[in-house]
Length: 230
Image 1: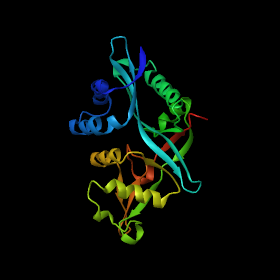
Image 2 (image 1 turned 30 degrees about the horizontal axis):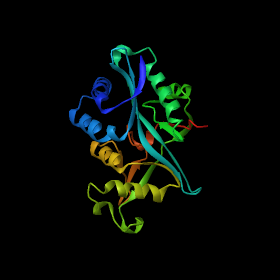
Image 3 (image 1 turned 45 degrees about the vertical axis):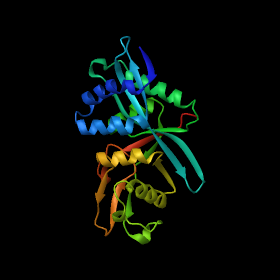
Image 4 (image 1 turned 120 degrees about the horizontal axis):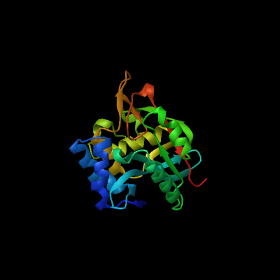
């Protein structure tokens, strides 16, 4: 068995894992594998017959600190899964470890991961993740005077909504993760993966910083922030 960086020819095998472990919703998978995966990097664990048994995918992200005028380039890890028949062999763990080692040689400064549940926290700590973070919601305004471009949320159409969201993140946080590619953000919006929660404040909505696996604002899981180069 060996680990590789996936090519488009491997998407069918990765999709098989997603259908077994995550969802069989065809429209969701179509967006994921035609619009998001081509802009991401996936590491796959194959057996001697070339069958993909495990996968870990990585979405390009930036971590910016406006106060320090610094930008770090890295990855958000998602879609970590193993075929049911291959469970118990630590294939996902070895795939993640291989990916971290490989990414650390390519001048990227971080990987972060949001565990699907709190029970997985120790799993990721053992793989080298550290610096536990709290997910933070924020209220973004649809009022013109709160938006530097002078535009409102209602003034944006579906194709320009990512720009508006990123602008609001920039305005509200000195230190934040943001998407390197607005096409990914648009696809996540179309999939309904960017969570939003109306609140009782006129013209404002809570929206979570993490791009996938939403929960309500009062039950955010921690995220793990890993600097492989340290």
